[in-house]
Amino acid sequence: MIKNTKEIKAHADIEKICSDLGINLKKGTTGNELRAVCPFEEHSKSDSKNDLPFSINLKTSMWKCHACNSDDREGDI
Image (cartoon, rainbow, N blue to C red):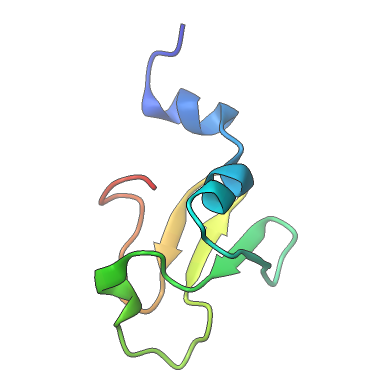
């Protein structure tokens, strides 16, 4: 039985989840990172010189939008 959100994240296929949500991921600078445009409507309006400000770490399933500084401490995808 799953006891907490960390355990759920450990078993989740983050790439499939993002694909199902319509988030178009690109490989990041490391093999463990994926990048995308921020998927949150209010966040995607943020001014950013970075074309793909949203990043996901595949090892930890943690995410951060570098344009609006939102991250998974505010809630999960």
